[in-house]
Length: 196
Image (cartoon, rainbow, N blue to C red; front, top):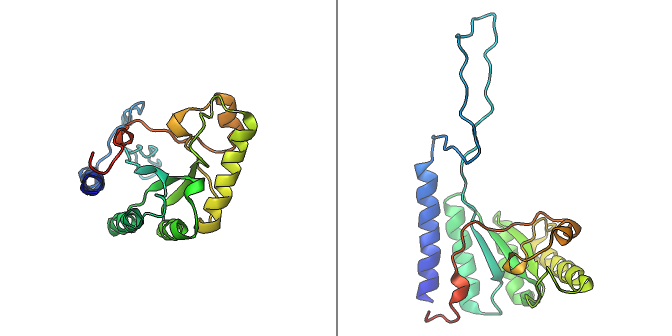
């Protein structure tokens, strides 16, 4: 449990430091072009050219495979995490496994949703590779999870992260959702117990 708390604390500190470090600064993002300047200063009769705002780098905190099965420690951790993020004006996105959603775990889903966190689909059972499973299994996993999430979040589901990031282009399109993957993996899935 300590490692989980340390990991969450690290994420919060990282997000906080990154947000303070970037306050008031335009941080270029890969692919951005440098703003161009005009050769002459605009006069009172000549309108100033305006540059589109430069996109800023952002950090998105996402959590997969929740909610934890009726585990009170993890439910409390979800509340603490949501409260700490809200304290700093932040939120996270939780990608949930539908067969873990019930009345008990649903309370933490409702809480996170009410505090500005997004709740997305991960899978219903996390037992299938969406690149190769039967198409009816794929659609059933999405629809069943969607219904379970919306029951407790009170909001329409708008995001989907396939397990393992595995999905074909055609199924990604058929899902009707933006597919949210990652560019940095914490590899927390390597650890099978709290002692790890």
